[in-house]
Amino acid sequence: MTATAEAPRAAARRPEGTRRRALAGYLFVAPFMIVFAAMFAVPLIYAAYFSLFREQLVGGNVFVGLDNYARAFTDPAVWEGLGRVGAFFLLQVPAMLVVALALALALDTGLTRLSRFARLGVFVPYAVPGVIATLMWGFMYGPQFGPFAQLAEKIGVGVPDFLGADLMLGSLANIVFWEFTGYNMVILYAALRAVPGELYEAAAVDGAGQWRTAWSIKIPALRSALVVCMVFSIIGSFQLFNEPNLMQPLAPTVIDSSYTPNLYAYHLAFTGQEYNYAAAVSFVLGLIILVGSYAFMLATNRRSRS
Amino acid sequence: MTAIARNVKRRRPKRSTILTVGVLAAAAYFLLPLFWLVVASTKTSEDLFSTFGLWFSGDNAFFANVRETVTYDNGVFLRWMGNTLLYAVAAAGGGALLAALAGYGFAKYRFRGNRAMFMGVLGAIMVPATALAIPTYLLFAQIGLADTVWAIILPSLVNPFGLFLMRVYVEAAVPDTLLEAARIDGASEARIFFQVVLRLLAPGFATVLLFALVQTWNNYFLPLIMLNDPDLYPITVGLARWQGQAAAAGGASGDLIPLVVTGSLLSIVPLVIAFLFLQRYWQSGLVSGAVKQ
Image (cartoon, rainbow over all chains, first blue to last red; front, side):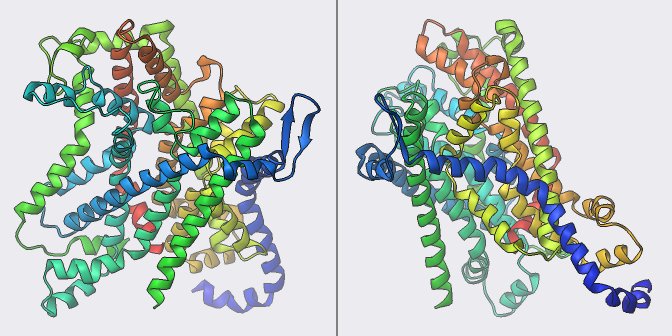
């Protein structure tokens, strides 16, 4: 009531109000943006700057232009690491998203018993820090008291060497799969819950069964949520660090200092003191992630339009 | 929110055994390591090696293990837990508040640079952890902040994904008409935010808070490079250090392994409890996040 009565007066003082309101907008975003600038923008600009230098025994810090980047692009250790995280991505992400999608769809049918328990059970690993998850799986993979080794021994088959060179990438993929499938499932499930009920009613009237509904209504409705899950997975996979870093003491000969690009940059900076080159390597990695995510979003956009 | 509540009530026909079995099998896989952890924490180090990992052994050493874990090395475990709690609460609480303020500002105010700034922050999600951590460490070392609690709390205050969620949430939960009415009643912009908006944002705020809490609790890379002083370690770095010592010593220091196991279990209990109790919040918060994406 008051709103309508006061409307003309409010409209009359709009110019001043708009300016004051813009100021209020700046004030609301200022605290976040200031911290963001200090903790994100400044370090990044600083890193971009010192990635153009090289520390030399003679002459100290020398400006070398893009030499560090040229070196990164031709460094076999960088490419080996990138190839490994690429393989890791292909090994882990499709499996994770397919299982997360299947679980979300199954739970959304409402046809499963104990669905609340199942949903929480699948999600609970997300609440477990990645460090703890890796320690746990590391113990379980172990040949001495890991339950898999114990079972294999009992049955009399050879103990698979989960921490050996052949299986390590798969073992790491399993840890990340364990950590993040539930998270992706909850996002997809949440998106499914938001599909308007009328769509299902219409489908039921048209005689569509559960499978048909899932394929023709639910999966298309999950499109944008799936794209988001995928982009986060690209970013996460290529930045792989914690899991191999923690597995290193268990398998020092398998995981070397350039096992993943992030691990390589870390060792360059903190054991080799090659900060300048490390910054260049991590920028190259960031660039590849950016290009990869952007290309993926572009591809899905184009396909949805045609 | 009400539309979603209504959705949930859709009538469902008979149950499916195949789907139930499949979903429960998945849940079993995801719960298996946690079950292993619980079992392992009840064993002495001899039993750990000599009895089957997925079932309890004769005598229960759980309380002895807990006692040993919290008293080892002058109780450094409790110190690490306290540090983690401090870092998580300060960074998640502060970060969620910053994200709520800015999310509201970006969603409800028109000003020059609004969209550009928002997209700039979102783009930051792509930056690899090392690309940021190395220069941050060098800068902090120069101003004497490396190896202090600030080295962990300050960088963790920035939560781009939290900002994204908050903005989506404000758009969904805060009607413009309400803000107009409050303005006409003479409320200042700050008062509108703290007394009207923040209350409407409670579920979204809880979601962002919870996810930020997990992120900080999870933080490993940043403290690994920032901190030298073991007294400042969060639990993740502390346990990784114990694990490294145990692995380096091989069988010789087998005694550390039960400590890593029991410490791992103790360190995840608070988060799991938080997630179980705050279910309604993070689930509804995620719904609104997922819808608008």
